[in-house]
Image 1 (cartoon, rainbow, N blue to C red):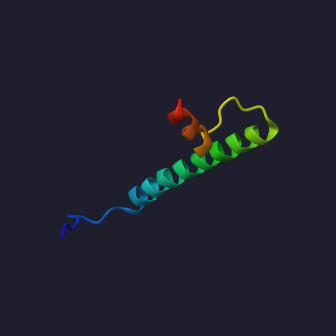
Image 2: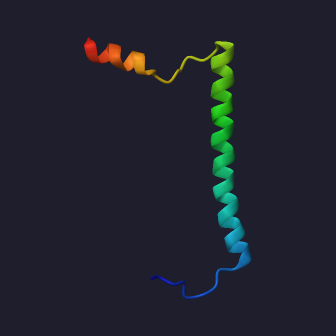
Length: 59
C-alpha cells in the first residue's frame, strides 16, 4: 500500500480541503440559482425530462 514519504503540513492540508469545500459551495449556489429561475419562469434552460427524451427517440 502506498504511504506518503513526509507528513503534509496543516496549512497545505487545510488549503486543499478549503478548495474542495469551496467547489461544493459554488455548485450549490448554481443549483439554487437555476431552481429559483425555473420557479419564477425566467429560465431559458431546463434539463430535459424523460418524456422529452422519449419524444425525441420516436421522431
